[in-house]
Length: 562
Image 1 (cartoon, rainbow, N blue to C red):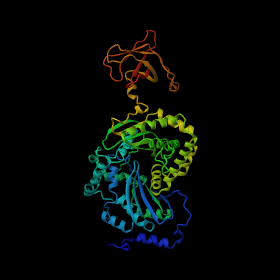
Image 2 (image 1 turned 60 degrees about the horizontal axis):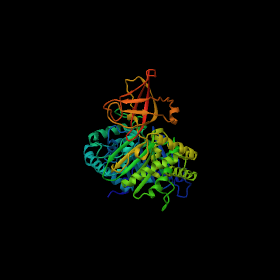
Image 3 (image 1 turned 60 degrees about the vertical axis):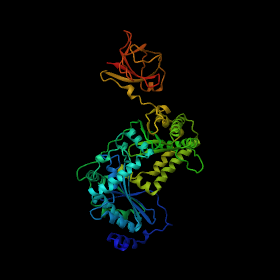
Image 4 (image 1 turned 90 degrees about the vertical axis):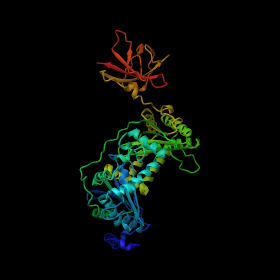
């Protein structure tokens, strides 16, 4: 067996000698606690952040801008993750495993939608060895064919099989796809329905690594390490990290756009439903979203108590229902996601309760005490994530690769104090008036549609303007009295009034009331050809309308011809 002394390198010996001649750096547990903020430095063009907790262990991580959002082809992020700690130019995968085990270290690789995280946890004195190892992973990994087929591809199939039965993960991924389409809408986990094998091979992974592992795209973050010591070893071992891609490639970094909509997927493995709305980014540009997530609620924070949140109370009264609300924050977008999982009937009831809870907040019927609890809970969650080792490293790294500096968690937590009941009311009303994202997975016979639980219906198919009409479109809403609707000629609907709606004044709509409408033969589900019967002296106005399913409420577009 290889002895520990045989693994000690010159760098490690130098580190220990430097520590021995500077006893002031050897702090015990009785030392003053750190402020909790990461100290950032620059080491040969690399952003380095560290926080010394004065404990006996350290975690060192590389946060790379290589999440599923940035992958040019499906599966490349997972492939790059699985190639971590495989054969390098200096060491075999077996040697890496053996040496790490003998030093008591732990090696991990994971990814999020925006970042790839390569981490090592170890005893504090072994920082030089693991800094050198992570540098080798970034700059000298061999993307070999045999490792791809024997390890990467095999693990990919196993992960696909496991994830295809995880209805909660599928529903959340589908919600991102509906909300953002590409970029953040790419699936976080590989599924059998995603043809990753069609695009994934060792050459594509190597090409992606060439674009990702450059100085602007990575951050080196450590907890439990002295900033000066870490910067010295990073400068020595990471000097071969290129400033740009050797092949000239660059990551696709399109701005995120929210779309919204609905997607339903049958799955016999279980039932899950995600109701989501536009959220806040990682800088908490909309602090009321995080407070709203706390008010809607997660699992109770106190044992044997239903909790104060609205959905935790509803879940306690609905057998077989698990409800959680998350403010999913990204660099330039966010998603307020309510996830319901359980029996189909319970999920249906939970979805109805979710919309009722949002409407209650929008109507201002929530007590000030509950609002205060939600604000305090949101502050605790933010500060707790910044204190825990893994989540704090990820937060710091995400901030660096997106904006060049770690997130100011103290400032973010303070922004929650300004959230009032009125701001929550305004935010909830805006969400309900906007376009929701609804993802449903499971028994579709029982699970509801978005419009069945009171969410806004997407009327874009009914509001299609004909390009042949040189017109300006203005929205208005009318209530029609319909005695019959048939696919025959000369079916008439009498228009008798237009209600006063608040958004009409905002959009500067001047509704026009026409005596009758005549529909043509072979009318589709939304009439594309309507002939208004206008008096000879009337202004030339054309009306284009659509009829939502099972409703007599019609939405009109008034065209004013040139």
